[in-house]
Length: 70
Image (cartoon, rainbow, N blue to C red; front, side):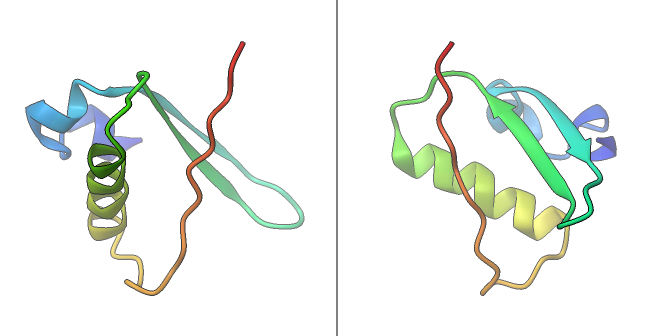
């Protein structure tokens, strides 16, 4: 959450981020970053890689991108 508040994604990437939520769960914690509708898969990957870098996650750690429609 502090990464978003502190604008650590940079102004270009931050403009695509709508919010975030952290859920503490028994089977595993979950961090969700909400994005505006983006059709550019490379931009989505860039945001994911930046998140992994800022959180100092291992490069081999897989993250999931999930699309939800209302």
